[in-house]
Length: 388
Ligand code: GLY
Image (cartoon, rainbow, N blue to C red; front, side, top):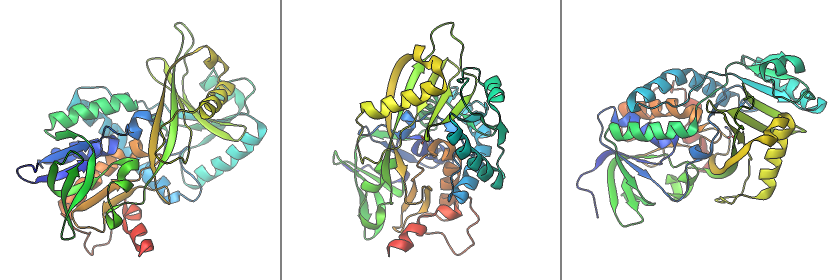
């Protein structure tokens, strides 16, 4: 079955990127259809919702760190805009984070990280153990100090998804739940998307925002170089009357990383594993055990908490860990994918960018002007050129 007329835009993907793009595009009076798959839960639903441009700044990823910092600045307005559009709270908290070291060797590693953060001009302040414990009294007395990162905040990933779904509905986006088949390719131009059911969604432009699945939803040049990187998060609730965590804590525990994100309702999200296992959503004992053990070493009181749920997500990883946002090599197809560990943080700027690409270069590759966008370093051609 073919829909009557082409939509202005078809967005493939029901995670934070696809929803944010669909919502923003619909607000520009375009007709938008959003195709959301039920096959894989979006990585957003398994995220912890950290907005962490500082703690997620990694060696060799300086350009990504700059993009992440810019994206963090966009968040306060974006959170207010979604809340206004949806009438729902997204749990955006400017709480700041602590990055802490358990043992002396973790401390030495943190010192190197601190120097790197300062080199990038990021706000990072060294704290001794008692200063850390003054900010987060539940930390174990045996820890070795840490860093105060006032620029790293959080949003509640699940509240955010609910708010985005409401905003999308209110903005008049047509939502289709189903499996995407191949893209419709009309003499080298993408003109829509097939559904596994046989239905076709015709569109003048297709935005591929299907996260980890983006790479396998299209063939050849239309497939972005995105792979799934599995992550587990664990949700816990404090017993009633127990003292609550005060701060986001990112820990180094005998060389392993973990994070603990306290929500306003008293729950805590522990994360996250980083596993290269393809499209595997199994919950295995080992990684869950390691994560819980590391978190409990940092905050012994977690042993008293209730285990609520374990969520698995597939992050969309790329060869350089940066997102891929821009016109693909195939006319009519735009990529907004590959956000790896920063999908929620980058959602507002990605949605703005997608709207801007459609406003200024409808349907085809960018013209000859110098690329001044924050995504200039994260265009598809950095991989496409390498492949040819
Ligand atoms: N951004 C945190 C993670 O990917 O685990």
